[in-house]
Length: 634
Image 1 (cartoon, one colour):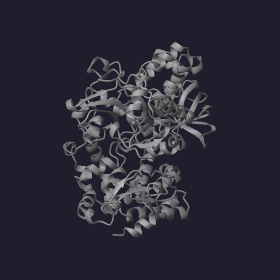
Image 2 (cartoon, rainbow, N blue to C red; image 1 turned 90 degrees about the horizontal axis):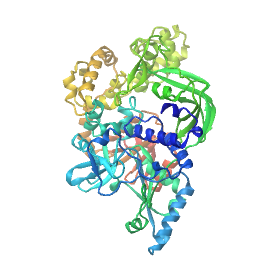
Image 3 (cartoon, helix red, strand yellow; image 1 turned 120 degrees about the vertical axis):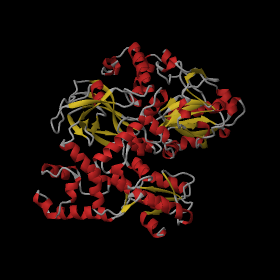
Image 4 (cartoon, rainbow, N blue to C red; image 1 turned 90 degrees about the vertical axis):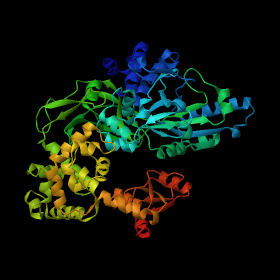
């Protein structure tokens, strides 16, 4: 199918488009999507334009792979259908008018028709049969696959698990970002792979043990109920509210009638419920040509293509660069200098390749662009497919630079950007230990000005003087799979000075650490023991996780924020994680986003007006960072 992907979509026949849509949906459902969601919709809409009655559109898109179809097939008691999509306000108005028209046939006035608005979760649809503790995927809508093994291995049910229900298997975005984003493109890909696996990977086992894979029952999700007029007048605001209140990745906003009588009257077709629709964001596109290419080497050695395009305005932002994602993606889509492709700004945030219009032979480097050592392909741990190109030379200057930059960024020590670090490396200062030992004269001797030198030294001293939680020091070592979250879990059981001596069995005994990760982390900590001991010898003002936990348990009940639901937003002058930790010690429940339970919104700089308006609408008290520290001193 790769030869079809690199052809202009207008040149594809109906048969080719149908084959491509089936293939892309198959790859998406097995957890290894070949294109973005927008790209799939792009091909599907072109197929619909050519052949609206094609069989591809007559049934729900299957949610399982051919490999799964041979095992555990279970018939649904009632069909599980897909959801119709709308991209424009006019399409939602047509839907509302249709609902009002049908309502009038059963004696309901337009103002009596209410609509439920809720988040459309981006995961794997499934049906829970409570009495049998059985979970079945949507499949083709009539038959689905049994994935009940998830229930036995740590799947968390969000909602009333004593009743049958339909929901979505998903993963919280924050967990994915902190633990899995280096290896997987999207939480849905990971969840899909875990759901279809007969033998779980270490990453899947850890996620299940961490309680990070959820079945969210739609019936029990937060909803906003509005009239048709309110829906049309406030559609953008309603979409934003559902988006900001959800901890999960979303694929749009569901709108459905509330009345069961009206649902029954409107009925369904072979593919959709007529009483329900999903509002999707139609992203603006532009056709562009790649005019430049840079190969970036990360701190773990992975090499990423960064493509330069002529300045292009999309949705109010001027875009000049776009990531190639990974070497497999670049190769599959024929990306490189001279290639022409369609650019899309997904969700009005991230610029992405949509489809290749004119491919070229891509540049997949056989040697590291930084050190010249041979590169090698690395497999995606979930799919087992060669996906990434990497330099394995641990002395590669680019990896050293990324590691130093990561270290100082994790500790909140400013002034050490990529240009500064590159000059340090060029002068043989290749690790953070050497930089801590430098004085002003050392910086001046390699070409920095006296003012810069003084700022470097004072900033390092500030970083060591101000309180910092131990998990940041550990995470700053740059060990794969040992970010802040994993570090904190370990530090709840062991003091930071003990970490260099931990064994694989020590770690595997901690909830959430699989065998492979425990082995890797214990070996990596042993290898970095000298670096960790060096940091501990520098006199950092360390706040130990175990001490924080003890203090929290002793004081939270009587703390100045006891029982208060608080959200921190905007750019703070200090470390936001430290502010959140302070609030927890004082008894607060720290929330990720504003909702009807929020009591206080603490704002730094650059807070979005919509978030402020939402807080005001909900009656949430809004305070500044300064007011927080003045009010909650104890």
